[in-house]
Amino acid sequence: MIESIQQFFNSEKMMAHMAAIIASSADAIISKTLEGIVTSWNPGAEILLGYFATEIIGKHISIIIPKERIEEETYFLNEVRNGRRVNNYETVRIAKNGHSVDVSICISPICDKTGQVIGASKILRDISQRKGAETEREMLITKLIASNTELESFAYVCSHDLQEPLRMISNYTQRLEKHLGTMLDEKGRHYMQYIVDSALRARQLINDVLSLARIGNENKAMETVDCTEVLNNVTHILQERIRETGAVITHDDLPKIMSHRVYITQILQNLIGNALKFQGTAPPAIHVGAVRADTFWQLSVSDNGIGIEPEYQQKIFQLFQRLHSKETYPGTGIGLAIVKKIIDQHGGKIWVKSELGHGTTFFFTFPAP
Image 1 (spheres, helix red, strand yellow):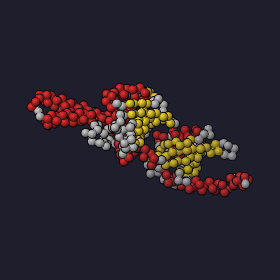
Image 2 (cartoon, helix red, strand yellow):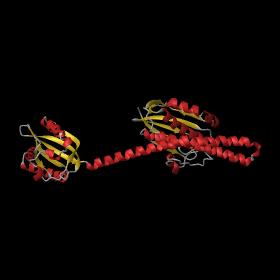
Image 3 (tube, one colour):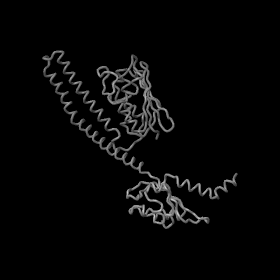
Image 4 (tube, one colour):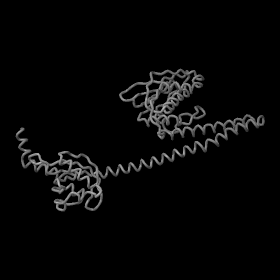
């Protein structure tokens, strides 16, 4: 068996077999001397570069090399003379019609029976389609960055230019109510309060949109964030609501992760704030959990609140999605969108498990340091 295989590789059949492979290859396969003179040119090279074998065999390979890249050939030949291969070298070559072709080149030394290098075998693969896709992708990214910059600028303008008139509406409505005093009946005072509440909701909406626009655009280095410290800070911020609802908040040993302190604060404040807001008949029982899984941390915030119906469990992370009227449960419908965007920016995931009337658990992951 072994002898028959050796005979095959030493036979003319093997040479014919190799020639058939080269002839049928879709890649350009070229051989040349150590002086750069083309000695073979397969049909794949004819298709890729437009020259027939009879037109280019015997000529110098520089005929297909752009003038500004001619030194690449010197580098290739030096590598080959020293018995080294060149793999997947991306460059440009010139076809017969003058068009540039993006190619990936692999070069191997050709040796004689004594092992002396006598030439080079070169395979050129057309990567024009991939390069075109990469260029298109880079253009789209550039446009997206420009668009995001414009949106961020718009958000800042909204924050500055809209908040001030809203603040004035709220202040002067309250002043007008005091000025009119007993001249206002119950209905008039109700209208005044409606104006003030609407202005406050509009200001909160603007702040939330601005927070969403800022995520991922800060030029701050990542830092080690102690989630336990952040949780303590969040419970301090929410202490009034915790006291009013009689909530009990517990937690596991929480990890330190690479992020921004303000981001982790936003996540925990939103999720714990929702647990306080959407409480059931019993006082809120909220637990912040943490489990290490492979290369990431899985954190969770669970409660015993009113729960979420199955058909809404994916929609809640979308912008401006509300499951209840703002009169029943106040809010802008942006909080969970902010949470999801932060986690997405870190390469993590967020999902929810809930049973209507029996509480909700939000799970989210962060890469472990």
